[in-house]
Amino acid sequence: MSMTIRRVGRHAIALSVGVTMALTLGGCGADESPESPTQGGDTTATPLDTATSPSPESGADDASNGLPDSCSWLTASDIESVVGTAFDEGATNLDLSTDFQNICEWWAADGSVLFVQVLVTEGAASLSTQRQSAEDALGATSDVSVVGATDAYTVAGGSILGMAVGDNFVQVSLVSSSPDDVTSDTVALAEIVASNA
Image (cartoon, rainbow, N blue to C red):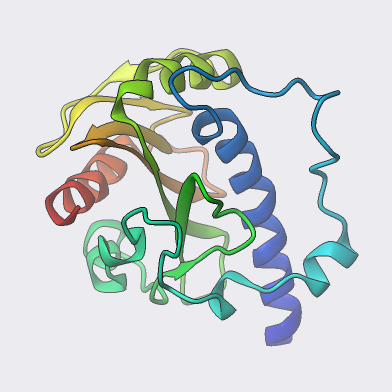
């Protein structure tokens, strides 16, 4: 498989997962409601969109919206020490980062469908809204303990973890093609993120 096709495929996966998570979990402030499907534009990515959009690897790693740079909170070696697989360094996903959120992604170096995504938004006060949105979209959440964070929870087999870190809502996601519960790995990654945030 050529590197270009692999990147387009990886970008399409990240875009579809990231858009879903960003709209579901990171799209609302404390006093905002999510858009209904009829209010917003079409968020479905087509092969043409992903082929012409910049890949996460090509994006700048700096946060220009005043939010913390979530790429500085984890390293590829941090992730490898938790997950046991080599990862490329993180890069800001410019397609999903907005004025209200920064999203950084790290991909498995072997090209498999395995990546880590860290989202940060202002307003830890919106955590209860974020959690309710997660439950509405993905099912019941579970409380977890994350050193350095408060009000942490997981959903979707532990692949998504939301938490308050200081004044920010932070979401750590460990996405793979495996159906196994990854709560312990996601919590370990979240603790690294919280200690560096």
